[in-house]
Image (cartoon, rainbow, N blue to C red; front, side, top):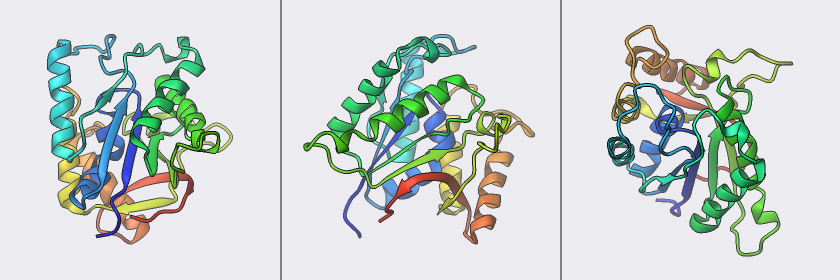
Length: 231
């Protein structure tokens, strides 16, 4: 095995990490790499039909266990109101996580996403990922990647061509797509019946399509801002 890497996802809400990054997380954790999922609105208080917070945290922990990830890192920023939070507060929270776990790679939302919370997190994470350029005690980050969230990224209207444009494909195999679906399903009420984008059929179909684009056996796709991939 190659050297163990530390891989961090930074997302807005519980389930985003599994929707955008779940199959890759399952693959890499099985290979011995450390996966950390930082979820900035850990309680999603404004989410419709959300279970009580203890049950939600149980679902979140269960989803991490399915993916082989470490215990989730949860913030308490307000769901659907990230635009009311000073940008610097989001950046500094993410910087503290980066300082704590010293990631090699970071995955976050695409900024041109229908969900405004995703937009705010993406911009803050992009800023926070530069921390190693200012601090000698921060390990240089080898790559920053943007993910697609079914029923959110795919519904965003393209502005001046700034839509999700994948340029990196991670081969995950059907078994890790099934792990992804299991991890999403750990969250109560997130999976929906076909033809919703968060249905098992569409998630599996998207992985098949992304695999076909890259000549791979099922894949998750990402848009790389920069990277030196060694996984």
